[in-house]
Image (cartoon, rainbow, N blue to C red):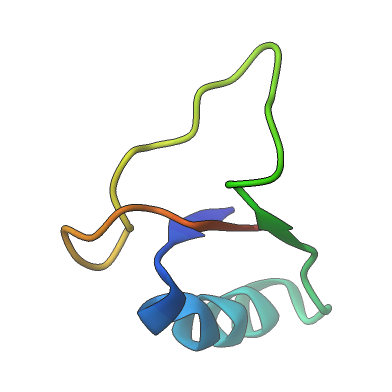
Length: 55
């Protein structure tokens, strides 16, 4: 699972496919709220805001 900005979305997809050998689901964090989990504020690869959850 990766939280990333738009710039690093493709990289996170590639990393997910390499690790799990399956296509990930992409969740837009601007349109989705989780009741039991707060996503990280920053991208996993830089200091920009995390916009997408790759899972």
